[in-house]
Structures are given as structure tokens and as C-alpha cells.
Length: 316
Image (cartoon, rainbow, N blue to C red; front, side, top):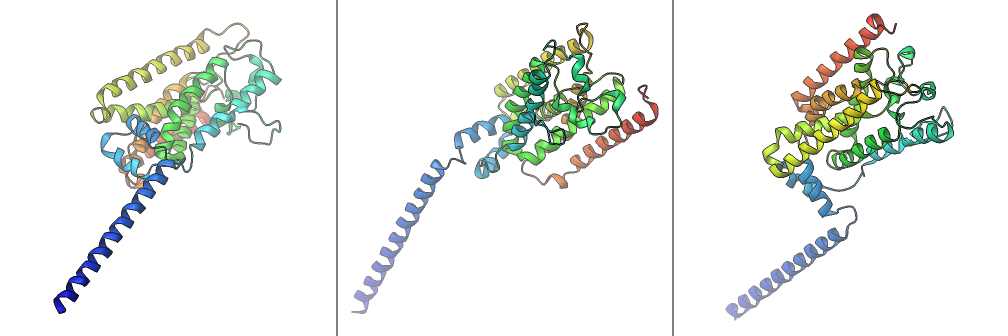
């Protein structure tokens, strides 16, 4: 009797265990099914983004926690800002908005280079109005023609959105604005008598940070893709710099020359601050000594630029 009772108890235990295992498997399948239908976890998109944006060792970590919450709002917002104009001067402008405002409501005589009429914009960086400090940032909202704004928008959307999906808006915004500020300050030193427009400083900061990340992790980012990526970046930089040089030295009689120093300074800001930020995907950024070295060097350059503008600038 005791043996039969023990046998029945073992059978019950085994049945309960099998039932629990089946329930666990069913729950796991349900979770996988829900994850496959989850619109905020498009696995294929994240897999492609990870191959282009991250070295091999950290891709698994990204894919395990990847989601689109929050979505890449910074790059999209700054791009719309270059597009949408809010008519009130006191309201915050938006990049494409400002361009449409000056192109439609204040038509220019030509669309390739900067018309002299746009120099009256309260957002353009102008050497004569350097005391209006917001111009060192707001110049990114004004562009020198259709080619100029389209080039910047394409580059910052194609590169900026995947970067923001991986690193989120705070880090991408830090790199972007570091490039914008570096661009205007460098222009005030190396081309002190010329005006400045466009978001090229921020765009080149993103490209500089990404370029250094690909270069340092070349073997881990699939060599074939790595070569293609480097060639694409070099092609974009050469073509854009060529057009910037045209706007600077070969403007038509009714145009106004625009400084191109922001391109170079933004690139250097990206290759320093941008690289340290983008290479710390799975690390605490504030605990990385490279980040603080880059920030210290950047702040030293900013302080020198401020001193130069106050005491040494020919624009004085």
C-alpha cells in the first residue's frame, strides 16, 4: 500500500511538473508573439541599425534592450525647425520653417547662394552683432539656398536618426550643439569679418563622431561595410566642402560670402566629444575619463574664442 501510494504521489508530481513546463512554454511563446507584433520593437530595423552604428561586441546588448521609446525626436525636431517658421518673433523658430519663411514670404533674388536681404535675419551670425549671443547658435536655422538646406537635412536625417535610435536624444543633442557652437566660434576667429549660416557645424559633428567610431572599430564593424561607410562619408564631406568654398569665394555680385570654418570646427568637435560619446554605448559616459578630457579641451577652446572676440577680433 505504501509503495503504491508513493508511486501515485510521484506520478502527481510529474504531472504537475509537466503541466507547469507546458504553461511556461505557452507563456514564452505568447511573449514572443506579442514582441513580434510590438510596433515599438521592429527587430529587423534595429538589427540593421546596430550593424551600421555599433561594433560587434555591443550589438547584442543593444538588440536586447532596443526600442523606439522615446523616438528620435531631437533630429526630427531640429530638422522641422529648419523648415517651419512661426510668425511671432518671440516664438521659437523651427530649421526648414525659417528657410520657407525667407524663401516664400521674403523671396530671394536667387536660391543658390545667400542673398544680401537675408543678412537682416535676427538668427544669422553677423560679426557686427556678436554681442547678441544667441546668434552663435541660432545661425543654424538659416540657410544659404536650396542645395544648402537639402544637403544638411539629408545628412542629419540619414545619419542622425540611426544615431539617436542607438544613443538617444540627449547624447546626440550634446554632440550636435557642441558642433554648432564650435562652428560659430571658429568662424569668428578664422574668418572674423564674414557672416555664417547653416547647420553644417552640427551635421559635421555627427559625421566626425561616427567617422572616428568606424575608424577605431573598423575590424569589428564588418570590413566591407566599413569601407563603404568611410567612402560615403568622405564623398559627402568633399562635395559639401566644395559647395561651401563656392559660397565663400565665388558668390555672384548680388550675393554675400559666407564663412565655411564651421564645417571644419564641427568635424573636430565630433571627432573629440562625438567619438567619446558614441563609443560609450554600454558604459556610463560620466565615468569615462576620455569624455572629461574632451570636454576640458573643448571648454578651453571656447574660453579662448570668447577672449579673442572681446579683445582681439578685427571685427571690433
